[in-house]
Length: 203
View 1 (tube, one colour):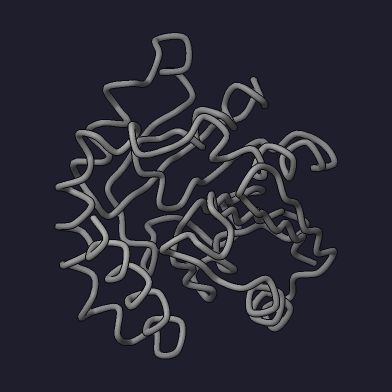
View 2: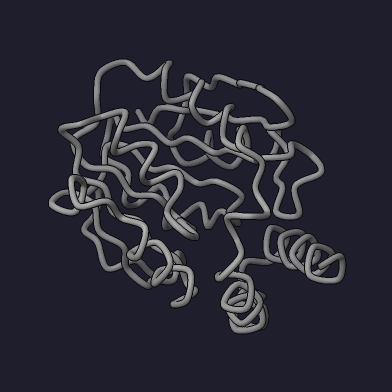
């Protein structure tokens, strides 16, 4: 487990410096998360996404279409779906096993407007500006593709369940710098339990 956490941090730091290195880390990370999928939820504390929930509380107006990048077993996608009962929610992950687990825990009452798909966040099969909210929890960000799929006026929310101790972690300064360069503003930070979150709006 410790080796896996160290590898996730190594991959995050490397890909942030040089996004082209993702092609080297993609398959090992996918295999790692495939192995973790059966017991992934047991590794999370009940308040792991409390900071994410604070950031969602602060949104002005409910979203219509939401993309949860790096959805894992779908926890954040389900939080969003319950919080915004009119929203269509798509959760994507590179790990097929994680997506299978998310589908298995999707409750029948949400099945009509929540779906989970296997996808690589560097090349998403969605139109430009297709979503008015994108969430990323403990996820390596690919800023160009992220900015592409967020609609003008749309929002993005990042969260890290253990703050700087999260294996996949990006500093708030780095997030703000990268997002500002792609037309995002109105940054807002949140913290709860051990977690942190950052929200922003696309101009």
